[in-house]
Image (cartoon, rainbow, N blue to C red; front, side, top):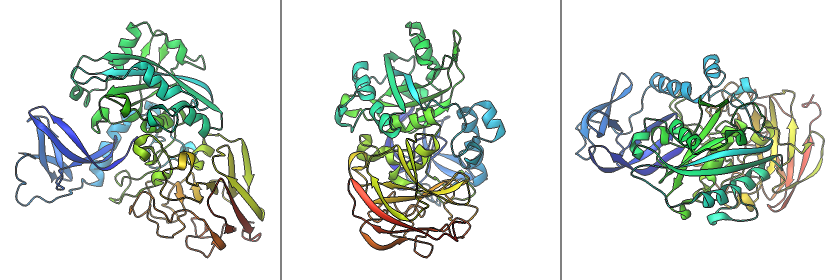
Length: 496
């Protein structure tokens, strides 16, 4: 899933000129507003965007084009009811997940506990995984980018392809500490039968797959486990990202079969028009869902029982909004919490004993963990100094994550029963991420703290979500850098 918050984008109308709208949401649920804040809906009967009103909690077209003056008495920023949003979410989820997962309720995005913190579904997160990437043109939109150039973006080593920090292959090799070698064979481009607008409401996946099979592509090459299942199928379509319908970048389940092979999860993202448009951020984000079943670590405020949205992990994780850093060309790392869940562990360092510790930046296979008396709840520490993949972060220093696989990043309440699955303990104590004030700021990490940095009585604190004392004590945090030093003191009575 790929979240946007107020992005201005140009939309094509069937019976009118192109219009600009602000987009809020992700592929499961989105809201579109005019530049002056009035909700717009694409009226299928009329063929153009109209102002929307609310009818029993659901958006309804007024029949008045947004190119005309705003109707009298219409309020801006209308929000659909929780029931309506939930129903729309369920309709999208029924297509996004394997049928058995949706029927059981185990795959709902707001509660991840049943799957030990991850989304339900088959993983392809270790070893050599060869994906199939299909380039797609439309009758009215074509790209000048070659398959060889896309292969360089996805697979090259020791390069900075097209201004990106690295290739997708190198990104996942680093994040997994070498445990995953994810490459992609690029085929196409193929030209679909319709115009780009036609694929907003019609998924392009089956048509594209049928076309590459007709080209003679050997599907066996993409089945690393010899199970008759394609590990990773990606579609990159010509043109800028269109945040609408089935062209919104997404990862879903696909039930497609051919010659003894079937698909599992796939992803769609945009290609751009020229090589300067090539970027790894969103492709890597959607690959995180597809390969590892990572959940999104953001809250858009419509999948739970409130209208409040929050930033989740903000730009500090690829699986929140970190895929957009540096225009998508230097995305944030996958945060330590998700890397830990998926098993990319080379070394685990428990910091339950008092002592002085050293955290190296970019040592993605080593995990510094404070374990509590609750197996589902723990703290993870990372060095997030502003270098390497962290070069574009708004903050730098020691990151402390409060983790609970029974939580949800839809739950911004910070209460015992409604709290984040992975929350950053923001050193400035402003809780800006939970309050949706920003997606990260300079005060979020601990650095240059000579005395107590994090204890049961500081703000933020190291208390467990039920308010009890975890026993974790941190002080003497050094300046940011390739190595960061800190000291841990543990209250043995609190730690059991």
